Length: 376
Ligand SMILES: *[C@@H]1O[C@H](CO)[C@@H](O)[C@H](O)[C@H]1NC(C)=O
Ligand SMILES: *[C@@H]1O[C@H](CO)[C@@H](O)[C@H](O)[C@H]1NC(C)=O
Ligand SMILES: *[C@@H]1O[C@H](CO)[C@@H](O)[C@H](O)[C@H]1NC(C)=O
Ligand SMILES: *[C@@H]1O[C@H](CO)[C@@H](O)[C@H](O)[C@H]1NC(C)=O
Ligand SMILES: *[C@@H]1O[C@H](CO)[C@@H](O)[C@H](O)[C@H]1NC(C)=O
Ligand SMILES: *[C@@H]1O[C@H](CO)[C@@H](O)[C@H](O)[C@H]1NC(C)=O
Image (tube, rainbow, N blue to C red; front, side, top):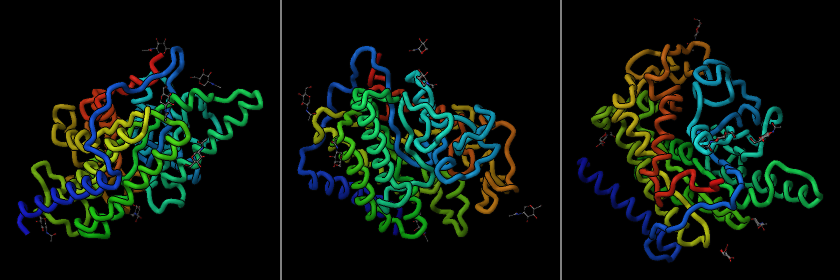
């Protein structure tokens, strides 16, 4: 099939998905809502985060006893924290922008402080299947447990890290879907991958609906990243070289990410209309993460498609059997010159650029500032 035929087909799929969502919800086309996040005077910001390793601040290490060693964490924390990164993640920079401490993982029993919120994100998580550890739905159920237990203690006159008002006014952030899409892409041709998006999106919708039913009103939802620019994807055996774009990324993988985000963005628009008094902000992480590669020189990155921590040298320095946490991996001297930390996750330097882009609101709709919620 010609490239033009392919992209026309892709466009048709995106349109069909958006249409299907709109019809399913029987709603008129979305409009950006005025208003936005708010909080009573003096209240402090609280964030509850749900997701995968992109925003896992130590959850998988705590939950599965997974040993995560140096060089993870070397650039900022100077020791491993359970993050798959040399330093801070996007969610850490977002917390810094609110002037609150980094989110403690829900299952981390020592040294956690939940008064600014809780991080339910766990590396490897997907939306489906729904009830396996630690699918999005399980993370939401953990949240409900945490909330119910807090309210129970408050009723008994005890102090809890977060009070009833804190739950209500909190920001609920969701960054998930990358592992679902990845799993599909490694098993199915593109058309069939895109056809499997609706149940994934339905899970995200369901999660927001449950949180909303339990009083949550402020939502911030991230799209997926530029999968086709990940060294892990670029290193697959029998790669289709004619699928590489002008920046050296795989077009088919990126097309899948863009199609997913288009449908997720439409879902968020619909939820914004449907959920009374709620604000649902969608942020296009694909555009942000693709720009890290396309405009890498502007941000001081020399090697946009090569890992800092990996094996094999140029062009990608990625080998599945010798990935960053394996004994044979090598690590670069200056991670700030790299976009990719380990072939899948970004470096702290790239996360800093991505977080700044998120905070600019340029990639969000409605264009609400991240710190507009719960301004003290
Ligand atoms: C951040 O918090 C610190 C200490 O709590 C305070 O001194 C500072 O003014 C705050 N900054 C902003 C921008 O709110
Ligand atoms: C937890 O964090 C809050 C807010 O940053 C702070 O006021 C409190 O002292 C901390 N609690 C502990 C036990 O460190
Ligand atoms: C929370 O959501 C669940 C699932 O939708 C629902 O069964 C429950 O009643 C809700 N709880 C509150 C307090 O709204
Ligand atoms: C390789 O990629 C090109 C461009 O995306 C596409 O047209 C072609 O069908 C692909 N070939 C195979 C064998 O997948
Ligand atoms: C929406 O907000 C208004 C005003 O605060 C309140 O009266 C109403 O109950 C809220 N509705 C829902 C569904 O939250
Ligand atoms: C790792 O390095 C050791 C020692 O050089 C070697 O014996 C082993 O085969 C290597 N493993 C892999 C997966 O490359």
